[in-house]
Length: 527
Ligand SMILES: Cc1cc2nc3c(=O)[nH]c(=O)nc-3n(C[C@H](O)[C@H](O)[C@H](O)COP(=O)(O)OP(=O)(O)OC[C@H]3O[C@@H](n4cnc5c(N)ncnc54)[C@H](O)[C@@H]3O)c2cc1C
View 1 (cartoon, helix red, strand yellow):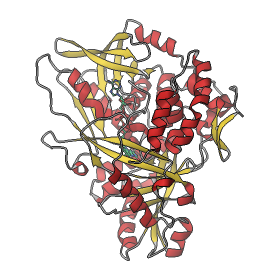
View 2: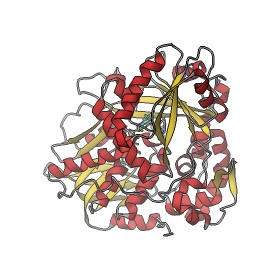
View 3: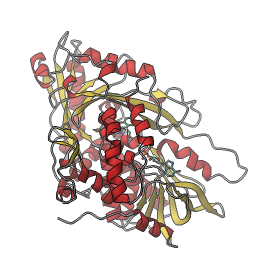
View 4: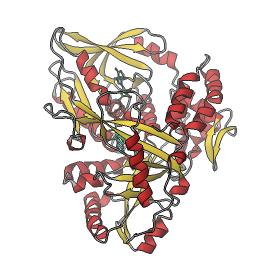
């Protein structure tokens, strides 16, 4: 076993302040920016990445947790998008099996034609996956559907279809990407924001970053600057404006997606459930995840770009109503243990008014501006690696980086890579993969702050988060290293003091619990 690298902030900040020129400076530590950082570091480029909050604090911790080709895009005839995503689904499951695994789905049928109709589409999905398929699609009798989905509503059920896709722990994957990139020499800092771009003769030559903990500013020089700030890309594009020139029309039309978490008793068994067509023509998932059930999601355009967007009452009602149609025991508002909202960075045609977000592009977009600023947004978590390759290809063909061959991350195991227990089970030490021995070597490995089955959250996990996973605040631990905020917000609020005490010991300074307690209360409140 090789011991994981300690990532001590003071040492990272000292590296940030060294006078030097980086090949690549990346703004944004979500799936997209972290993917670019790892790919570039693996190709031998010097890389710095800054994230204003925490890794995956934005959209990248708020996914439906599916590693998928996107069956619904196939229905829309978007074969190339699905093909790429199926390829990347295979890569991700192979490179990080401790946090990304295959998962069987069942689509129950309540109308006589549904099994045949959707079954044929799902057979095409298998065919497109080819050798990377995860298992064959099966047509199910009514009895078999009830066996596989013990929680399904039996009234009017007329069979179903079973198919395979994947699921993951999005925020833990993000932290693994950051750590794997760091192990390859990249410098990554959370709680460090890009506040201005450094321009010379109309070209972007670097970034001014502000350490959010101290307020100190550092000017970084880089050959290539990548704006990977998700729904916030337009604010960084605006930093790239010539003085006095008009503001550019925004690239992104944000659309929010709400998820509700309820207990596993609503969906016992180990299969996820897909509703292929809800009342508003979308799909809805019920997914077993880390000992609970995720219900979602919605697709609601919104004008603002809040860091913690609030759900709308209609979205909650919609999810509960749709879930109530297909689940034998319909969850109610009182059953919701956590509610969280993510913003999709949908790329809009510049003339679009942002109203019909379902018609906007779900593929990613890479733009190299006249100043050389590379902006990337859109896409999905599943395709982060392909997006990173596109970004580097564009930067190389624009002469911002020297040419170096790609494909290096296709078979690059992330830290801790080892087959793990199913992600449908409660969280525990298995999520650390081959790093579990290093975790257990820390003080408090058997001191459980919160217990769920044989897992939960241990004191050692908090110490591991501080020493090796760059956690700086209670929220970093309870929202993204552990996922307790997303699983059971009230319980997460109760754990804030204990986590803060351990973090304070590790970081050698006081740790405030109030901001997290307020956030945990927000995640328990339904509109
Ligand atoms: C509801 C919902 C469900 C989804 N479900 C799935 C799914 O099941 N499977 C799937 O594959 N995809 C899914 N997606 C898509 C996927 O989550 C996103 O495509 C992906 O997370 C976007 O990552 P990103 O890095 O581009 O953006 P983000 O994760 O938002 O990252 C951008 C980062 O930039 C940082 N930032 C902003 N401004 C600055 C600055 N000035 N300086 C430094 N940092 C800055 C932010 O703090 C943020 O962390 C879903 C999306 C939504 C909204």
